[in-house]
Image 1 (tube, one colour):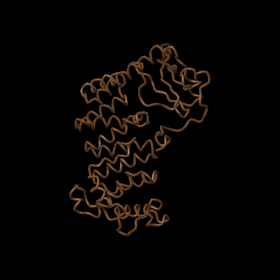
Image 2 (tube, one colour):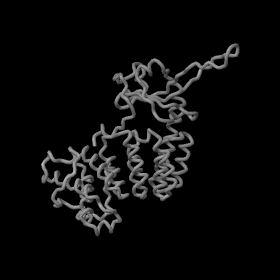
Image 3 (tube, one colour):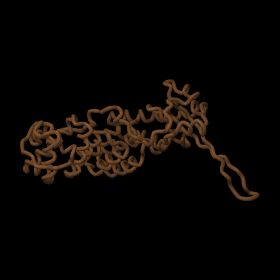
Image 4 (cartoon, helix red, strand yellow):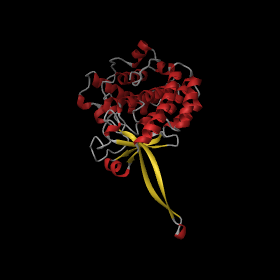
Length: 343
């Protein structure tokens, strides 16, 4: 998958394409802007002789993204960025925001580094299997930043590992409301949590999670594949095939998607295995379409009849290039065919 596909679209691109804010690019050694800013507005309070004006000041953490855009997050009372990022246009940043370099260097940066230290310690505990120590550190992080994405993901992984399904569901309900959870900056944790949901047999929750991710990016074949896999686990053949086809459109060479097409065909042709794995019957139209896609891949169907391109369903020969039944014989049905596992 290309780097372009990995990035999640968080909003309209700013009109300006200037890669630097003139006079501010010294704030970060890489040449990218990273600093605290402030905005202010005057609020009129009271009426008549009692009227008075009050200046309201808001502090922001602003950074320049890889594609030259600017994103701002408000700073909370603990002097760390909190909430979803807002895309800022260049003229807005220059005209309406005042840089606060001293505040950034002496207050904000140390607070952000201290938070990162807590999260690093929490991640280390979790990776070493010390889940309760990790949970305490993640809770410390959330006391500093209420919706910290790394802390939420970390807790979600812990709850899933301990099969605490209700707490995992509650955590998921928080995560899907946080746009920053899907911005690609925490890609490893993002991938890991989605797989953890499925492996904990929280299939409905996994579907919700992947659909939420697809609100932000529609060009990631792995997201569609993992959505298809979650639908497969819950026995929803129609939605499984729809998501699998989207994955195949984006990347026809994704091997795990090809394998899942074969599994669908194989189970449609083997009632005994359907019963063995507790799956409902594969609808004839779903099996026919999956078979047709495999036929195109093996050259037995002309490209102009490709159902991927035309969306049609038709009957084709029963032949197997490498059937789902054969696939299960070779690997067992516990095989790990997650597109994200290899990332």
